[in-house]
Image (cartoon, rainbow, N blue to C red; front, side):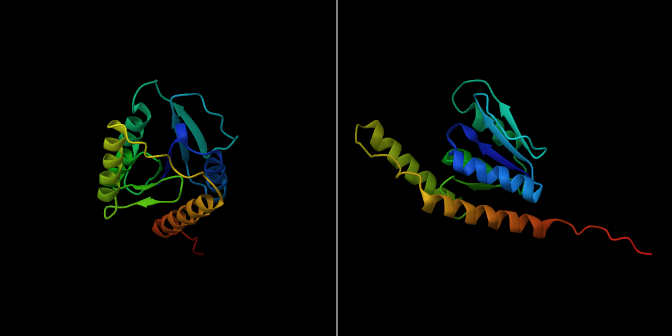
Length: 159
């Protein structure tokens, strides 16, 4: 199981948490963006630069994700594709998308898009702060725990 990050708009604090978790838990973390990204020296962290264009990074992630993988994204349509593929999706603010919640999230996203397109000022998300960092860390820890429970036990040598 891997972690994929829609990295173009992912907050630095979230990336830092993911980098630490990658080394601590020995889980592959791949950042995907349409710009060159700096990553720490780690065998568990890498970055993929995709071409510029609308939803190119999302398309790359959607084609790579496998059952059980975690995708960190604020993009609700990408989250829907991930959930449909059997992966888990988590936005950087700590909201986990599931088969039970993704339809409501898509509906709200589409509603707000229609309002903005008709000229209504809907405002943006609240500032990213400590509460969001803690929510993300809690959900990431939950995924890592589920991952460790799903791993087969290590073979023991019998003498």
